[in-house]
Length: 520
Image (cartoon, rainbow, N blue to C red; front, side, top):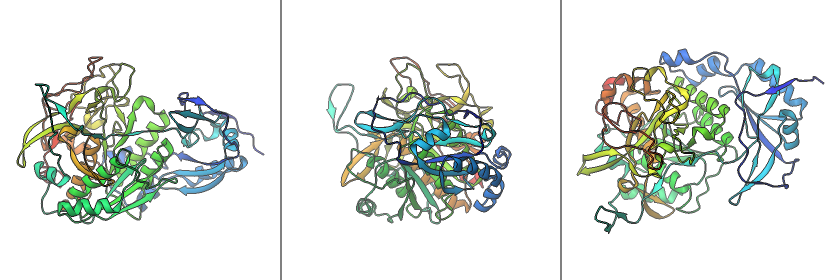
């Protein structure tokens, strides 16, 4: 039997789990763990050149190396771990084994923790791997299954206060097709031939709600299918659960592009589940999504370095496959739900290889924009945005006036890139579990943009793909939002909108009429 010298896996350090450890973990329990591998070839040049490859071409050029897989297999067999999935394109190996065998293989201690009634498996510190695998393995996911992300939607309050302290009924919400008209999305197209992927880490949908909703709008009922990742479930329960996120995403994207197929990838709310859902959608050669909408995330500071790196690596793959990734950038202003007194941006929206979607507050006059400003109701109801503390300024933002981080003065990737209506008080009509509700949040902007991309793909007869370099080279395709801020009052830290790009609404609202001529 070979003896392997162990070293820490770069970026695998995980903070101590929150909650009380328990003594009831069964070390004989079988679990599944995902091992991510390096690429055959470096991919950044292909992204910079705007290459778009087929799935077959991509796997051949940028998939995993067979020799690397064999080396990992030799080590895992020694520890009685069984390979149950080998995806060469996404460079993902999934192994199954007993908890005790994984602990010995990777020199970790796994325990159960209980927090607010939730029981999860956790670890603290680093994962250890054989020294000869240090350049091969880029991440190991699934040893720890604590919750990874939160949905970015908010429910409109029953009443809201005006300056005169009178309570009045909230204004009516929009539907996706109404906003498509207001924002002048391409007409004469419905997304036919396109597939919109939606990533969900909880909740579910009911077909009856979908049928009722689109029938009431007089729109074609979109074909919605599900893909279950890592034992994820389409499990609707009630309107106050993550069902709200699921239905918001489906109904907005579907109302904008009812002719597009919608595929919902359900996965557990863990870093492993989230990553596997993303890579599963990107490398799905059956449904072949051309755009992916993600409305889940968490402040950058709450992720391991290996998660940040491997998620971004997946988005790089999407860029070369011609897939546009639209991600909500947070609903808690500049602090992104944290309580440490600093500013934070949301991940995965902070990846340089996605379209980060911020939020506005919109009023209309008929089907025309009346006013549109930065969405900011309170510290817990405002658009996210700011400067990444992890990712450096990407090439396409080099000439953009990205500010220093308001906390650390680090100059990194700025977000959002664009924005659209997200204020719950000017929100979206949603039918969820039989209830008519009005939702807001940057959660709504991601599927709205995904629907738009589907229309543009159909209109141009090709995939828009990674749109950020085009957007930053042609900022005139956006209508600037110059009023408002996402400053957290308690700390007085955050960002203010102004002419040009800003860390509240990016370049502003996409002017859909101008886009086709730019991306043709």
